[in-house]
Image: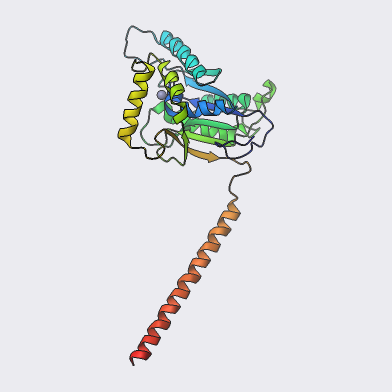
Length: 283
Ligand SMILES: [Zn+2]
């Protein structure tokens, strides 16, 4: 049950499951479509949760918000299928008005307790400039993972609905300025492009080949080095077997500091001895 992405065995007997929580239809495909596709190919069941249905994502004043929302939900469902994902949950919070409050916390905790994922992917809410919905979804989703979902005293009414507390092991923060984890999605580019093209109300039209050409040009100008097709994340672990033991880390740091001090002392002593020897030789 271990995975290259979690690097650890989930501490539950649940099936391998990933929940992706994002603000708008198309956020997933742009930030982590290749990673999602890789996980689905590796046998993970992936569920998408879209906090809004992107009902303000147009400059067309004649298009009613509820019609756009319905269109974008259909586009999201089609894009998900391109990536091997067959369940999308739409929370239908109004686009641009995502609030960090008890309502959204409850909705996300409920979703986590229902889906029971080992891995959760969301926006990095701590990144600097970003759409306010992206920032807020990232922060609330992280709060929902820790401490809310795992603690039975938060939203105890969920128990009556058969939803037990749940511990997520790994969180991948997408759209981050501080990545510590990279997934090479070179083999998934075709699927990522197919999924992006499904968001026809949002993206530049073009054939698959035109899209791939545009992406290649963009990547070359960005000079991404040895792994030009990496999707990057900030990876966090919560509990689980590979979480660092704080005491062990502190002990190791103290030992290293002591060794360094010893070496410095020995070096200073050697320098002093040399100086004395030189002085004697000179005298
Ligand atoms: Zn967005």
